[in-house]
Amino acid sequence: MPHEPGKVRLVGAGPGAADLLTVRALRAIEDAQALLYDALIADEVIALAPAACLKIQTGKRAGRPSLEQATINRLMLRLARRGLNVVRLKGGDPSIFGRVGEEAAFLHVHGIDTEVVPGVTAASAAAAQFGFPLTHRGEARRLLIATATTKAGALIDAGWAQAADAQTTVALYMGRDRLEAALAQLMAHGRSAATPALAVENAGRREARVLAGTVGDLGEVVTTAGLDGPVVLIVGEVTAQAAAAVAAPPILKAQA
Ligand SMILES: C[S@@+](CC[C@H](N)C(=O)[O-])C[C@H]1O[C@@H](n2cnc3c(N)ncnc32)[C@H](O)[C@@H]1O
Image (cartoon, rainbow, N blue to C red; front, side, top):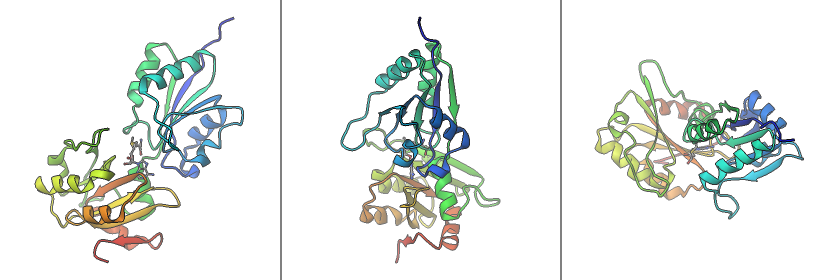
C-alpha cells in the first residue's frame, strides 16, 4: 500500500548553541525520521536527533561539497513520499537568507504538508551575547538586514543608500571576505567613518569572537585578524554599547 506522505518541517536551528533552539525546533528534531542539515549546524544540535534518524548533510562540510538546491528539493520530496517525518535544518532563522521560500513553494506544488519553525538569527544572537540592542529609542529606528556578496563573492548593492542613514543599524550577512569593500561602499554613500561597528564571528557560540572598530577602520582589523568562521557585521551607534556591557569574551579593539 502506498504511504501517506510525511510532513516536512523547515526548521531554524539558531546560531549554533543547542540551548538557543526554540522548544518547537527541539521537538521537531527529536521527532525527525530524516534530517537534512546545512553546513553551519553544530554537531551538538545534530546529536539531538534520534539514533535511528537518517541524517543527510547538505552543506559544504569536512571537505564534502554542497548538494545542489534541486537535489535537496528532490530528496525532501522523496523522503516525505516514503511517509517519513522530515526536518530540513537551517542555521539561524530559515526566512533570513535561508531559501525557505523556494523550498516551501516546491513542497507545496508537490502537495507536501510543510511547516516553518523560526530560529534565532545571527544578528540577534550577536546583540544578546555582546550586550547591545539592534534598535534603540532615539538612536536606531531601523534595522537593515542585508547581504553584500553573491555566492561567487562579488560585491553587490546591499541597499547602501538606506544603510548610510545614521539611524539605521545594518546587519550584513555573508560578507566576511568582502568586509573592507562593503565598509568602503557605506562610506562612499555617506555613512560617517566614525560610526561604531562590530564584526562578530560564531555569534551565539562559546567560541564567539568580536572585533570592534569603526566604519573607517574595522575592515583592516578584520582582514588582519583573518576570521574563518561565519561572521555578521553590525554597523550603527548601538554597537558602542557593546564595549560597556562585555566582560568576557574579549573585545579586540581596532586601536588596541
Ligand atoms: C546563508 S546565511 C544564513 C543566515 C541564517 N539563516 C541566520 O538567520 O542567521 C549565512 C551567513 O549568516 C551569518 N551567520 C550565520 N551564523 C552565524 C553565526 N553563528 N555568527 C555570525 N554570523 C553567522 C554569516 O554572515 C553567514 O555567512
